[in-house]
Length: 157
Image (cartoon, rainbow, N blue to C red; front, top):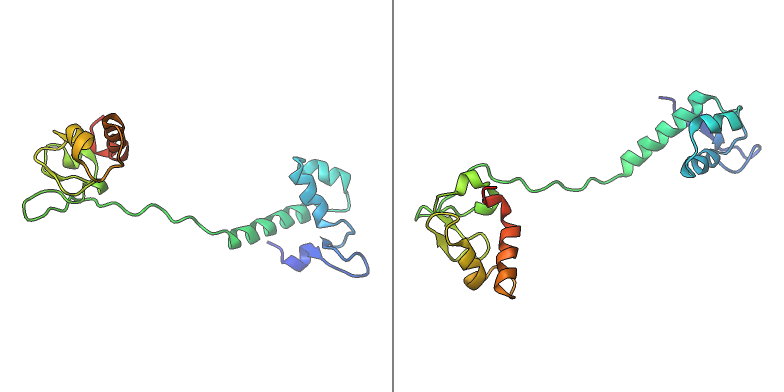
């Protein structure tokens, strides 16, 4: 890749704006052209003083600058691969697991963390509708739907 000074210059004698090196064509012209949906070939045909490799180098430098400034979104927190159990043998990290690791086992309610299901998912619906303190208040059907939505990964399809 070319150095920046080989691609773009700013010379007071030519213009007070950034131009393609060795030309009088402002770099902004290419940016505006591409921003309006134009393609590189049309731009090069309109401005023959700009060599193709120079225009491509300018685009590459712009993308490099963009990547250097872009912040990455943090990824999801890593989920456990194995169940953790309490002294009574109940799985305490069900919200981090998948159905094949919890179905049929003793599981601490992932929402309220107060009830232990003796054989997951038996009884989840009654608990969600009436007793689970980890859900928002509302009609029984809405509470059940909220539970199922939040912990759908704990149910077999």
